[in-house]
Image (cartoon, rainbow, N blue to C red; front, side, top):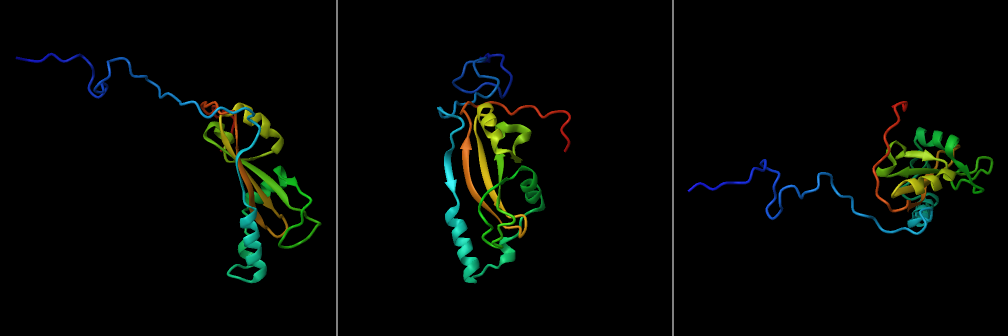
Length: 173
């Protein structure tokens, strides 16, 4: 006797599922509820690492000043155009003429083409309300001696998962 099988294409049906009940697009699970999308969450402060590095530099351990002062040219350019000056002096060159500059970077899949770029800190509130979740990194930079160190990192966003915005057509690579 020959068995009659349902007319479902091969590879579509999963045992225990009825045909046509499987969703076509993946369902995005809701993230954690967020009361204030502009309030930092999961904050990491790198002050202890900074202090350990500066202690090693002044103590003459395995590091020298050239190893610590190796800022990338793109980081220096971002510090010049997107940085926020601080009242602190550089811990390496100790000059108040060129104070330290904080550069803010954002990273996240839901940011689209903005991810990985330096942004003005005033723009973070708008990004937090328009993106589900992304990570913010603040780097301190001395433009004179090229000292740089990660200051803090934290998460922002409203917690609602969404797709990344389309890349603008006029955006240059």
